[in-house]
Image 1: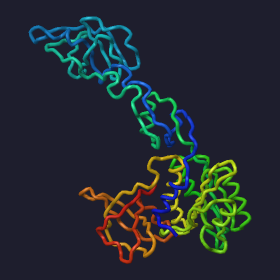
Image 2: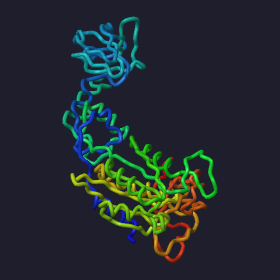
Image 3: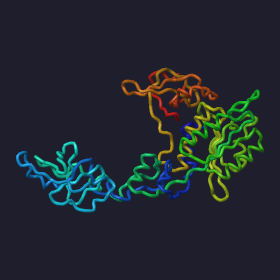
Image 4: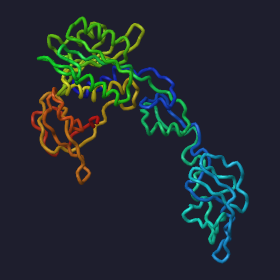
Length: 409
């Protein structure tokens, strides 16, 4: 049995990132960059107006006074999206909208709120400074400027930044091919009529939903009973067409817990089996190397749904991050203050579902919840964080600072 931290580090040591591929940026949401991304254009791409108003040459109104006002005719109308083909004629102004290209010769923009327009003229009783309310070409960044680094996941914000900088394609890690195996004679699909001793399958929908929430598609879910030959055939098939196999159930030491032994019999190299965490101790992790050199990670989780959830959030998430080459693949724990004491486990890290809220001082408060056993999920309707309590012989006192991760919502 190894510690939770050792298990999380083992994924980093044992797994290699998947091959790279070039994809259109518009198809790259949730992918991880395998090469830096740089701007393919200046931003802004051209001198443009920062607001709706009027553009002119500031020198044309330097002599304006209340007693000697200057009027400039409005010679051009410049909406956004249209090229300013002609220079601004000397001694004139142009109506211009936000984001519109500045015409040659213009060097300032007057907001429409303070402009004095009379019919088709602008009247000035005072000078107006040059270089106001203009976004100059390249003010934000120049072509070739660094935008994102290797190992950075492309979320909606970065996606928009790349598209804005005319990055049409990106080099990313391939998306993992994922297979899910749900084992157990007692498991029946949601909605099925249950006979004595049977239970509904909550693991399959939960695992699939989490993977979809994380942005993975094409998930293959297989169901298998507690039969060794059937488990062997199902696991072999999953390994052959996957980069990661996730199984639930059959990972412990019961008479029909076949997954670890079958995985090893199929040539999977065991990295660890059993982790000092509660719930979720009987986790198996191994790596299968095919004759062609292809690698498949096998992660066998215990069957209790509370343990499956924690296994997904900590172990599966970390393994996926490593396969995709994420810069920092291990969980990024935050910290909060415990509102009331909780029991430790003497040998294992406890992983507790709690509520989290921010108090008036800005401190995150962690509120323990009942029903923490591995077969229980009823508190997930109110739990929003997973809290980590290290082993010990005495309770964790109220007011202690503990690490936590957000639960998916």
